[in-house]
Amino acid sequence: MPYYIGRVVDDAKPLVVRSPEAFRKQGIEARIFHKVEEIDLSQRRVKVEDLKNGRTEWEVFDQLMIATGAIPIRPKVPGFDSRGVYELTTLQSGIEVRRAVDEAHPQKVVIIGGGYIGLEMAENLVRRGLNVSLVEKTAQVMNTLDADMAAPLADALVAAGIQLYLEESLVGFEAVQGTIRGVTTDQRTLPADFVIIGLGVRPNSALAARAGIPVGETGGIKIDNRMQTERSGIWSAGNCAESFHLVSRRPFFLALGTVANKQGRVAGINIAGGQATFPGVVGTAMVKVFDWEVARTGLQEKELQQLGFSYASAKIDSHTRARYYPGTGQITVKILAEKGSGRLLGGQIVGKEGAGKRIDVLATALQGGMTVEDVINLDLGYSPPFSPVWDPVAIAARQVASLV
Image (cartoon, rainbow, N blue to C red; front, side, top):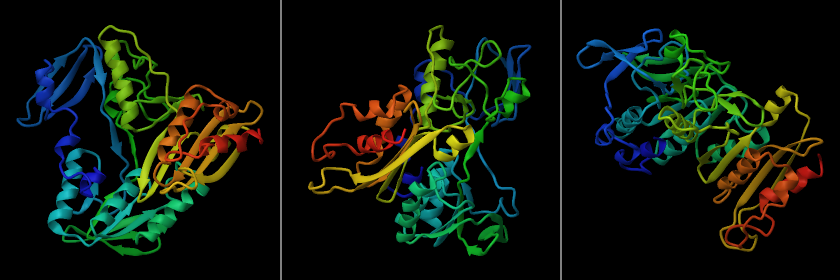
């Protein structure tokens, strides 16, 4: 959606993976504009409202799959319901933001939240020629990175002309006749023609919880590795469900389409009578911030400290290609490993073109339970247009191996 709003992608149609009509051609009855109000486990049925005519009926089931996704974290502050305050939660909300930029020609936008959506929206609204301010209540953007790895991103935002306000908390919105005119923090008031809320999401598990389906410590629906809940014949997958973190060995919530698709595949196979399992995740994610590529996987330092790990870390600066090859760019790699065992615990990468997808090497190593010594000895590809002889990931692994 940020890239559609930024007109990098100029047509919304390719953003729809499968239309209701496509489902119907496969013999699947896709009921749009219907809302499930209640799940009755004792009678094995759901209460459904047809939103077009208001009629309600009960639909019985043999197996039930709950894939209600995530809902945005909404600030409880005055003026939140003002016209011009937007959340990016559905494709339709993205279309509405694009329409507002195209037709209303706003000049000043304030983004609340410095996570993935906030940073992607900041870049794309700058591309559209808007004056962008970004407010983040913590001391850094991208809190899924360690502070030292996030620092270059703040510099990149400021260099692009974005007004960055760190360690400022949202207090409320100022409106005139119901239309947004400003954003008030605990330190200032920023003029705004429209506002983007990017405070993250939480599992949309309330419907399941009301039905007596257990919800876990993350707020997501509790599932096993087959995607079955603690109630027989009731399944769940995607952003409403918990995941399992393969490094921390604890329940985990990660609202990403990559995870949701894999979980959905496993659930579908099992509901249809097959056998499939989903082992868990390592928390891999990526984002582009202007000409910087940002990626992370595994655990970051504050998580390791909270969990009581004894660990070492190493950070190196290198090049995305051979130093002498045209177009080479900066790359910084940070690797975290367990002291004593040398087990890889996490990694973060910030760099120019060609940096980000290197995170997949570390994600694969985490999934396989490798040590940093194993990472050093991986048979990675080399050619000057793609990498130095020693890939930056391997260089970082060498550094941290000497500390564990």
